[in-house]
Amino acid sequence: MTHFFPYDELTWPEVAALRRDTPLVIPIGDGYDIPKLAEALGDPARVGLLPAIPYGFPGSGLETAAAPFSRMVSNLLDSLQDDGFSRVYALHPQDINPGLGSRAIVQRHASQLRDTPPLPEDDDRDKCVLIPVGHTEQHGYHLPLATDTIIIGAIGRGTEAAAPDEAICLPPFPYGASTHRASFAGTLNVGGRAFEDFWLAVVDALVARGFRKHYLMSGHGGNCSFLVNVTKYAGERHRRIFCATAWLHTNGHIATPVLQSTRLSGRGGMGHAGELETAMILALRPDLTHMERVVDETDFVSTESYYMDWIEGGALVANPPWDDDTATGAYGAGSLATAEHGRLWLDAAIQEKVAHVREIHEQHRRREERRIKGFGLWGKRSG
Image 1: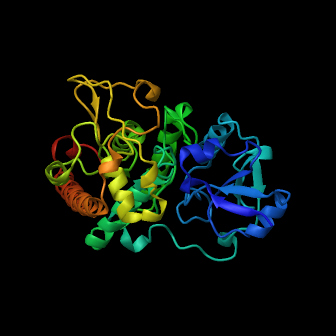
Image 2 (image 1 turned 90 degrees about the vertical axis):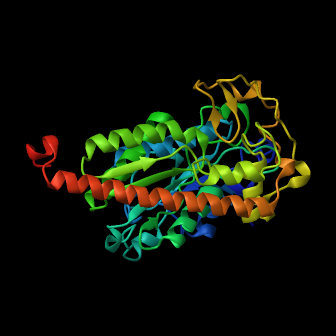
Image 3 (image 1 turned 180 degrees about the horizontal axis):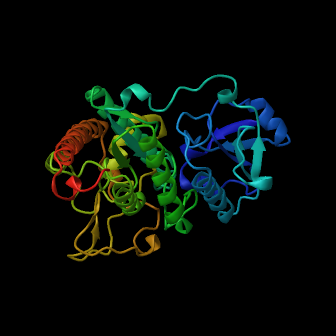
């Protein structure tokens, strides 16, 4: 009997130890017949199931243009092949054709058996759409590949729960952009250009359905500069919306004072898989946190204008190889993390996101009032 294991719950050394002929499958949507999948693969002893792609395809409730969706999926499969895996596949419904050739497994999907409600529901058009974007990437010896997705998903859902009349949250998207992926096993990469094209297509699809306020929320640092580009493109393309993003979470005017007054590590202790992320995963998924494996690494090559803590600090923007600063994949002092601090910091992150949602609503409202009154060039153009 085939054993299916969740790829994203592994740590990177566990991925490095996998046989390279282990089949790895990215489902496009969920609800597939797993025994039939095993049969299609030849009933191997083990199969790695990666996180399902939650939307973007026909039948998902939020369909994007086909070309950027296909490029995104293809790049993810390329990442796995670059890591040496020889049997990588996307599992997709019969009624789509992402052009993956021999890397595709086609199966009847739940979306073909029922009418899928729109995502988000059309009745929520007046709300701000929260779009949590995580990633599947290495987080040292002690945290799972799903760390970024788990955290930003919890923050997105918490924000919706705290402001249900103002925000609606999409399912967390489990794949992002990583330029450092060759350094440690397990990390996927949508690719910067494909990442931008896909997320702009998501905004396009939402705008076409009447949604005007969007908040792209990243749980992974590598996504952030690309999401800035998406918001810039979207704001120029769709002049009556307000689309925004922010650099990660827990680093604005509400959460930063809480973080700085309670953290146990000094600067450099929260760079990646350090005190902050470890604490949050301890609070959210202690079963996936291996504290006995923690290795603290804080010897980042720091200068006044470039250093790593929770965000890349200083005036300089750079992208040196990760191998320069970490032997284990972690930047920071994960050993100092506690679940109590994780809960405190998650609450602060949610409070900060709620404040951002309210600002997005205010920005859109006040700008629309000016437009309707014909402010500036708006009095000379129709849309």
